[in-house]
Image 1: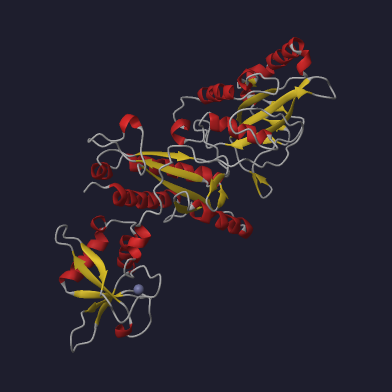
Image 2: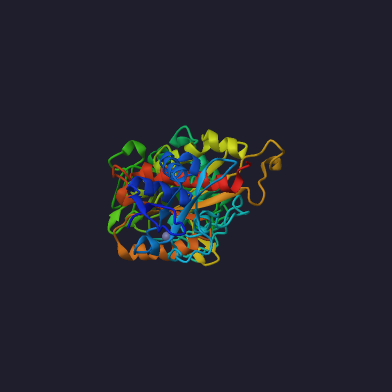
Length: 462
Ligand SMILES: [Zn+2]
């Protein structure tokens, strides 16, 4: 079905079709009606509707079959103040659009309306108490924020450390000069956690591979054991970048980065049977081996990260690629002069990779990415002291789809309903990431345009 241009109906003369709209014209109309493009900024839309308006034509909708008289009519109205032509409808028409048709009265506006504006976006969203499966080897409880779960796992510890160092926030993660910088950040963040022996985890977390290779870690543990024999055998943690993982070997092919042989296979996210590709952030737990009596890496896990320079955690290589496109989406929104002018200042955008489930009204969910846009501080005061108030931030959820696994997809669909409680949901189709017309960047650009228009509708001062 296609849209048609038609002459207006008069008392005696019926509708007469002038021509069908081209696919390009029709796409432009749909994009504007959906709010993806603004009416004044889509040249195809402007050319189509302006000439139709000048020629006193209407458009026949394609949501119903039949002769021109049996199809709903889209009228054109020109706003005097802006000169822009808008798509409209005949009030109380005898042929209504089918339910849900994009061109039905109010439908475009309904789809464009912001779902929810969140006041709490600058506070962390409530995280859910974690339920983790038991890991391998000894489970060391550590105390600190978010550690009250029933069954702590090493992978959970690693995620908590990354979160404490804010590596899951792109604005933090892309600001480091070198991996040594953000590893030091993890070391500092570990200071908020304590071991069962009441030692700060930062004192027992080693981010320099040399500390392990040189025997320094073993000496620290020997000394701690001698000093506090009543506390039992201490543990320590190793944490650095892994470039290769093979069974229980970490960085065997990259010894300069810190080769570690673990007593058990390294746990890391997998899709199907395939380990998600690196680089990873590796966390190993060092304890006394019951067999050899030596300090060994008993257990280890690895979290894929975007890159060594940008250690945002990712769950798949598709997410890694999506993140690259989303980084430029953020730049384009922040550097959009027209948007800045309309909103009275530059918006701030941050991307967050949730590391734990988020509790929503409908139940827990863990979106792939959350984008938060901060309203600019206006010249007329704006949020005092940088403290943003209710409605001063907009949140969007981005999901990366692309595992050809129906069960996985249906599981996602269920949690998507919950994610909509957090903000407007966009999906990226990883299956198309390499396509010429719908690649990762093109998908991100479309999301950027949508967000831009959404922000204009929410916050524009004009
Ligand atoms: Zn229709």
